[in-house]
Amino acid sequence: MTTKKQYRNLVQNKDLSDEEFEERWEAFVLKKQVEAAIDDSRVDEIMRQFEDEYDLTGMNINDKLALEQIARNSIEIEELQKIQTQARLEGSLMQVGTVSRIIKDLSSVVSSLQNDLDISRRSRQTNRGETLDEYLPEMQKKARAFLEERLAYIYCPECSMLVCNTWFTDWYSHNELHLTCPRSECQHQFTVTSKELINNRNKNIDGVLEV
Image (cartoon, rainbow, N blue to C red; front, side):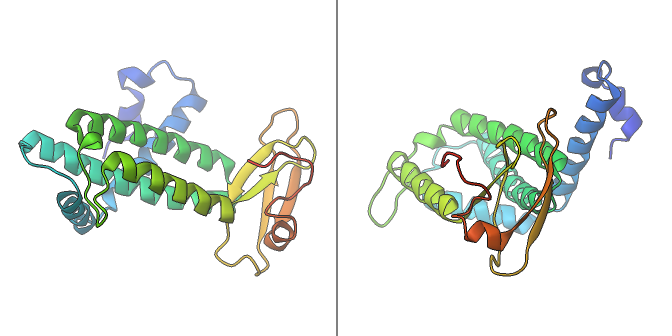
């Protein structure tokens, strides 16, 4: 693996401040750890799903390698989302930000590869004969409804800034989050419990707009 010194000497990192470099190094190390932990069997499973669900006829070897990259990146995003959730539960907002940036970059790569392969417009056949263009919006709608039903919205009690979204596997246990408002002018520290959120429609304060 690339050493920290080697990474620092890369052209794109030479002019970074120490703080900027540490953030980039943390993201680099975390991404490499996630990549190394991926089981090839999971990639194979996603590739089989692609073959079952999409029209992949006419793909050359480079196309198939790109499709495998989509599968790997998708798994990385899934694993990073788990890390992000844990970081939110622990109140580690800096790590949440780092993971969010990695997920955003990977999502852009996946989107670009999909466009290059043109699979976003290939037909996806279901039992009802839906096309991909019909299927994706419906799945996105269901996913949003699922999240809205379960996500909690935690705001700073002092300045009403949205600090984080989170959820709990067991809302009725005694779960506590100790948070610090990320707004530099505020930095208010506060504690929120899952029971408090349940009793207030998944919010910790009143008078804020529903998201």
